[in-house]
Image 1 (spheres, one colour):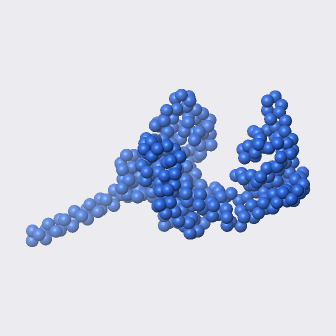
Image 2 (tube, one colour):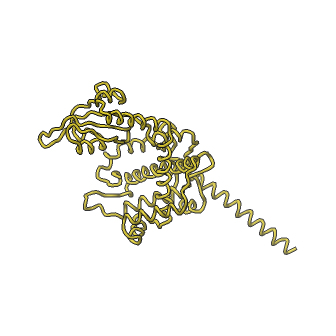
Length: 348
């Protein structure tokens, strides 16, 4: 009889603990998702229980612990550097500082979702990055930045990372992105078509065809009608890729194919002059637009069902990005440089 009573008490205790745990987790869930709370107790709980911050196609999710860990590393990076000599500052403890930290959190959540989407798209294309390849890339990056011991010391001091965190949070996602971008650029119909068009234009120029006539034949945009003539421009008025090339060309010189964020260019320096110490260039160009990897990725993201579970954020299907739910935070972010003109955390 005594054994039966002990067994009943043990079962009752287990059930009671189970009910308490369920109620406690429900309480934490309500605190997180309904009220947006994030105190020390909650942060300890989410380190153990993988509460999701966002879901992707209902099968995958970004955990709150993953987001909090990344945010902690970002905060650590800013707070463990001395910006006093540059006259800049970092302070996440003020009311405005907490808002800036919230903006960092939004950007991190967006990046984590992007990384997960890129990983899925890469796998669908058969892209595999083995641990050996990742290790080789880590070694290469370390060698580029000094000795292994000094790099690991900096990673720990600035981010609180060891070598595994460096691999998983930075190196591996970047490798998947680079591999996917390469795959897309070689196979996407629109990208291949754009590259073929600018290559054909360069072929005509090498066959001594007139630049203006070639521009009228191949170039896109308003300047095509005038044979690619863009008029006189200073370096400040040109996109960086064109400005750098223009400086290297003599009068009458024609560039190789230039790739920029907006497309492909071939430029000709028709003339150049210097007035009051400012050099300007008379430029003609052949320009072919291209679908950028960012454009392609945004289009692919539309096929993913992404839900943000946190109270302060939402997924905007039009921009395919995480947005704030609070209008005051939207306004603060839009006026960030005005609100915090000398805070280095705003600059990068």
